[in-house]
Length: 182
Image (tube, rainbow, N blue to C red; front, side, top):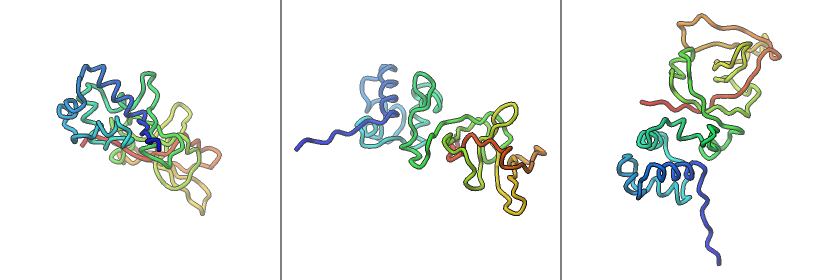
């Protein structure tokens, strides 16, 4: 009977390549220096797990002298597959929050996972929507009485909020997760 081999996730392959490029001879040594759980990276590289918990990703990124966003992207800047982190997402991608309009929900400088495959409103929540000049994160809800969508920001320092028709709402993705430093 043939032994079943484990498949290393794209994240595992990326971390392994970065550790080698940083001239670490032993994974066990890197785990100790990074301050992650013993065997956590070795389990990732062996295909026993597909990802690392967010706090450990942060420690690995810091030890490799890069941001978590850089760690989670391949050499071309494309996102490493996140389907193992968010299995129900069609097209998960990391995005950095570059505005405080959605604070405190999405703090400035935090990273969110956006399902770019979610192009339709499914429930009240935070979405990445297209605006006439760019894209923006907004809280979107639906009013069945008026048939309009209410689009707003969470930061009450901004006086923004509008009701729009379905054909005017351009959803580019739905926020399904957040990563921020504590």
